[in-house]
Length: 222
Length: 318
Image 1 (tube, chains in turn brown, yellow):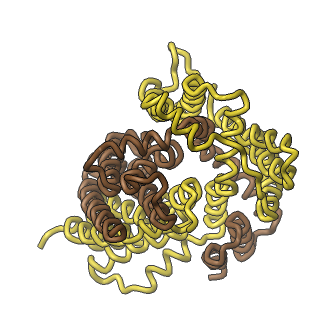
Image 2 (tube, rainbow over the protein chains, first blue to last red):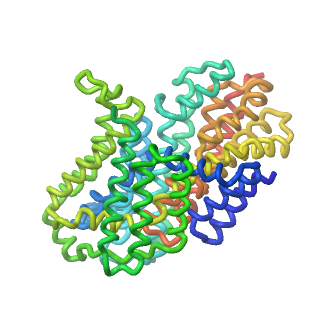
Image 3 (cartoon, helix red, strand yellow):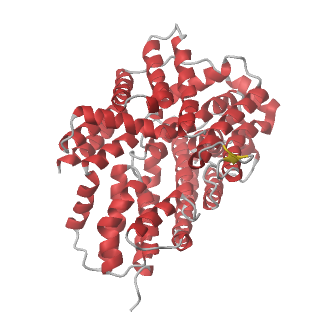
């Protein structure tokens, strides 16, 4: 049970608001110590795992381009386009992105999206623009943050509950590998098919919530 | 051959350039702290594979130390509202071209060079084609953006630093959490959680076993931040022996919905930093849990849906 101390440290640390990097480091040291591993071994393991995860840093290479485009008014342009569409609302803009993200992910096009290259420069400004129609910065910070959080959520939900419909995605390969170890062979297609009901449910559930978001934003405006 | 090491070196150029930019910023009170943090990050990304694990670990700890001490970067001058509105009007929708070029090029590379062979020569590690394409796409998109917006010479690095500073320690968090996942695996956290789920509920009906498996997948994913880490352990602990073998559940259905239940967990945990914490920082939300707060109702409803589908469709009728 002591090995769970790491989880307790994470929960407390995140809630109290200590720097997450410090929380994670302390949690790693505590868990490893509880399992009987010495500090030198743990530090080496952290170093090894950190370097092995270096591919995670590739997404940041989009930042210089995003920065330059923001400097040249990309966000203002994205806003302006939506404000030119009479019937656009925050919920509808996000619903449109949800459809796009789910369908492209289901076709295996998972890299058409993401928080750095798509949500920050394009999707979030569009969603905000649909709400702040008239004056430029009329959104109060709470509303703005709420809309932005929804924009990020749509990217995640569209990705997670779209990609499993595609047979060559990592999770389906993992499922097949694990079952095969136990002597059970399943066809990729028969796994992917069972991702379709959940993909539809995700669209219905989250789409409904986006429509409710519109209603709530309208009530707040009134 | 171009593989993960080359990708790491390419990824290191960004924090490397930011470190140099900080080092030359005399106006900044904490410039050496900032420069040090980003220089260490660049070193780990670029040179890490050739350094001893222990040294890499010490560099990680030094980086965590600098971040905890406080980075407090000075603001970088960017364009003002009027200039942005003017240039947005002038350049128009062409502004979207570089932004869309990145995903399109990543995709094109992945689809056109699936085995890493260009003109018959195996140039790229077939396992890393998407990453290599993403790196190439990022550089091409940057060049397009520079041609289109004609910024002053210092602007590309300056703008990069503006965004990197805004994101700060969160840039390193996904890798730290991946490292923590490795430590948790070594310490056997997974087994404790799986055993806990088995011991808490009586798994005497298909429905009970289904609920335990799906909720267990979500819970374990919340703990590990990654459904892929949870899946082998939960499936070996409950999915295979009980849901599939004991009650005759169809393996394809069980595994598919088990994984999707794990994804519901991913939506609810700060441990999935690159989906939930990093975007909150990237979008400059005040609440670090803002994204999780809007996701959890969808996640809970979908988890219930997954349990229902699994219970209704996986088991032999009659």
